Image 1 (cartoon, helix red, strand yellow):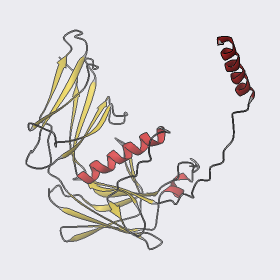
Image 2: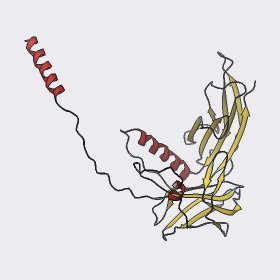
Image 3: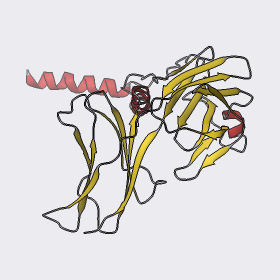
Image 4: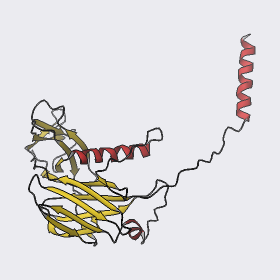
Length: 281
């Protein structure tokens, strides 16, 4: 009886092996409609600047040649930012910041005020007449309280860094923490979002592993951010993860810009404290 069972099992396997189990399937994807993409970060003491580009579909050829910027950056738009009873115009000209590298194609003549509570309104009229709007407000500056270097008691050639801040528990706050080793141009070794909803004390700490050596340069950047920006960055991170994982559900980008142009992106203020430190004993 067992012999017959094994015989039929082997026969079935042989039959399956002889079959061509590969089959090509054509999937008709919907036509992707490109959207205007806004990235406007208002940094106190720096000019009003904005990047206005268009989105690409996942399977669209990028064509990374000399015409890429011309095809990607949207020109001919009227861009204004209103605040404190005045309106600033951002002109269609390329500007850049070197460390870390940032590119803008609309730049204003005035500097962003550092006054907390100031509300800003973005208005864009594209070359085709479609509109984009957004609102944000300048948040209070939250400083880095202190940075502590601790050496590994079991392997004293390696150290970790603990970064502390004092949180205002009377309101809901959101933070973004970046940690760069070496320089701001390096890929961040830490880049994560945090909020104080589960904080039990007003002292919040961010740490590293025991991975630093004497002489290493550590750059801590602490951003005090709006909930809009928190949601935007989180949704971008989830979208990137979804693109890399074939079993993940698609994740939409949570934008705070809107209008007849059906835009994507973020309009927000960037208030941050930064500390550069060389690891010493």
